[in-house]
Image (tube, rainbow, N blue to C red):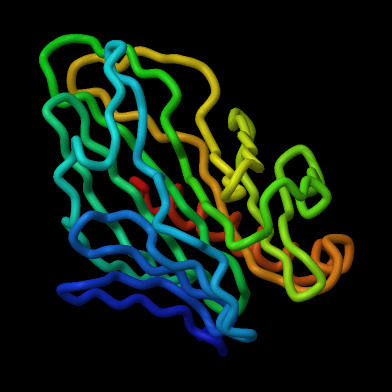
Length: 239
């Protein structure tokens, strides 16, 4: 049994997933993130709700308001606690899972897309995650590409690690509100009824340097993610 358990919560107004170190909160009605908080220091990382649902389908841009969201469920497994939200449009559906890991900080985000029509659909630029950060504008020095799959943001009071699988483009805007968008690279076509798993992303508030984190807390989180994926594969669990 894990010593420190992750948690999820759903009510009429909000849905939450978190650990004793961090918590992410969504609008239960719309399905977009409204808060990302370091629960140790109380720091709120978002200055406004996230634009995390967006993509082009057959040349038409779809955003959050083109989907019917708010269809929530909870899952628990040996490695963490998971919130699942289903978004449905006329052409595609999105299934978004956020897992808070037991015994370590960090929140994993998984997304699948399905073609709901009877004909092939060209898909371009799905957004995997998005953060409008509560940081000063035009301060590029507050952001760092720590590795090929990690960006860090923050200041002396705390840092935010934003990581991703390969096949992800990271877009940084520093005007007015600093924003980070993680977007799936490359266009693809979905056959009728086909489902595709998009690259995973994750987020982890921390203090200190990335080098210090990577040798302990982040390594623990990545190991937990590998264990979760092994468990999913061995149990034939579809994310």
